[in-house]
Amino acid sequence: MTFHKTVRTEEQTRTHIEKCLVFCVTLQSSLVPPSCQTALHIAIERRSLEHVKLLVQKEADVQAKANGKFFQSDGQPGFYFGELPLSLAACTNQPEVVSFLMDNPYKTADVTDKDSQGNTVLHALVILADNKEENTKMITQMYDDILVQHYKLEKKKKVQLDTIENNQGLTPLKLAAKLGKIGLFRHIMHQEFLDKETRPLSMKVAEWVYGPVQSSLYNIDSIDTDKDNSVLEILVYGREIPNRTDMLKIEPLHSLLKDKWNRFAGKLFFTHFLIYVAYLAIFTGVAIYRKAELPPYPIKDVYDYLRSIGELICVIGAVWFLCKGVYDLKRNRPKFNTLYISGFSDIMFFFQGLLLLIAAILYICGVTEYLGLLVISQALAWVNILYFTRGNKQLGIYNVMVQRMILGDIFNFLFVYAVFLFGFTTAIMALMKNTVDPLSNITPAGYISDVFCNKQSYTNICFTIMELSKFTIGMGNLEFADKVHHKEVFYILLITYIILTYILLLNMLIALMGNTVETTSSETEKIWNLQVRIDKQTLEDTGCIFIFISVFFIIYDGICKSDSRYIFR
Image (cartoon, rainbow, N blue to C red):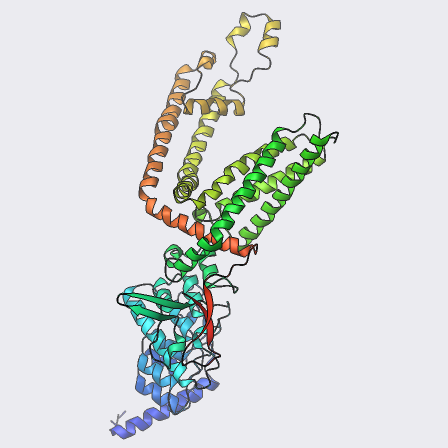
């Protein structure tokens, strides 16, 4: 077999490549499955601007989507870049390719086009951001370039690119907030374009500057809570956002929340506190001064009428706490590892209302067991008054620390302690089985029946647990040791139990709580600040009062009258 070497000129080679590219473009529309990459995607991946130009010149589809499983952001191994060629070029930091796809004499890419998840090229950039300095610098530069170039090329300016929502109803700014992309989020919030043509794209505009001091106006159209699914609402209720405390410190969010608290939220919070104290006083009075007769109690005099009114108020309050708890828990499903941040008080109020309503039903049915649920609900009601310590910084931080210890150190301690307690309880019960009381041989039978027949022994699991619990706090009683057959085994069990619980576990709990206070003091203050912001949002959501804050309507100089927005100074 003989091989012949074909020598081609540069022009012939270029013509051959163009024919191959034309064949690829034709093939992609007929044979290539829609979930695969197109030739244009591959050319962009290879970072070949020349091949991209040739493909576009030969009528390649600039809106083709690579939407296979490998290119989906569903948690599986793969790479999500927005599926569109323009998004791929932007995510791989190819500004020349991006500029060519947006502005060329052949076929320009539609920047407002969405992929299967409703994401535009700006959404894809937000998803790609990872809060690292180098990555953030690249993403923000590409974000601004695309935004400005699209605004200049779009003559009619019907749609502003950064206001387009994806399938979740999120703009790029809201998506950055939801994903915790703090670097890009800060950049968008402080976005300021000095050029007169692109000035409407600014999120921040300097009102006046005097030396190092300046006053700025911030666009809060999608930030404040006057609209559904706002940035503030996403951050305040986004328990899955790891750095939301830091994101809420970014201006203008910090000043906006502070202004709301000073103008109305603080006063409304104090009013709620007074109402709750009055409710708690009525609840306590009804529980303490109830009648000793079987429920329901008959109404005979004016005191009975007052008691009935108090009971009605308590039930109405319980319905309110129950409904509010269900609403809050449904809106933000609590996670155990973040309960001390938000959700702990919601659960406490929920159970307070639930137990009181069940007690009211049992009370109406004449069941005396209602009293147990009533007193538990009353105890929870008094504990829940700690919720209002959030209005004071010192008390609020202390309350956060208490919640953190309950859900962390004490919860772990109780789990290990329960294992030890139950294990040694069963061992002692087995050791005490068939043990005869020594007094039974020297005491008349009648006396034994009168004195000892109702006396509980260590063969009862509840009694044994209670007695061993006393040893944990140093109040155990060794009188029963004389009744044990194998005293050596018993003393070994008892001493081991005391060492493990009274000496080891209790001292370890104290050490862990001290370490928690020492290592998390700064984080606890952040959590308290976040809780206060959650309360501000909750108070605003109640609709009890409508407050106009320092928000006013502005029309920029040199901008058409249709470009108007809400601004926060």
